[in-house]
Figure 1 (cartoon, rainbow, N blue to C red):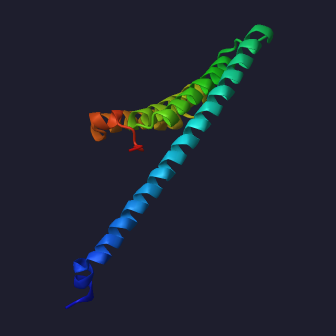
Figure 2 (tube, rainbow, N blue to C red):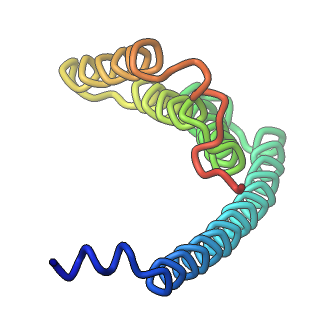
Figure 3 (cartoon, rainbow, N blue to C red):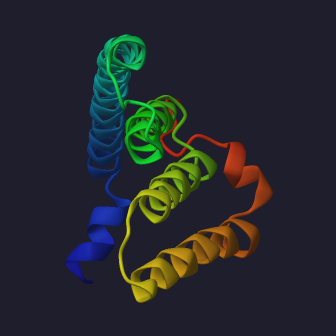
Length: 151
């Protein structure tokens, strides 16, 4: 008989394998919890920074002459919006939130950049691709499920 056949029939070996799998599952669970906590901490820090930046923007709106130029205003406000979408993605790690962050970031680039028409066309094609991914490749129940489950 082959050696691998003996391993499968050996109850001690099967018990050792089962214990190792259980231990590996516990370690993986601990790592996921740690990573989830770090993501939440980064999200909290980012929210505080975004609130400070938003406060500074309001102060600049009221005190700076020429602040209301469209490019300056849109650049500053859309940076905050992309940051907020990033925080949402950290807190709610679903395919839908990730696709929304990418859509907002690319849209911000199209609105603010004054690149050549080919670059804008590429960005619009990327946005269309993201919508197509969401519509055709991601199942509805997956859009609401968290990608990293906590068990």
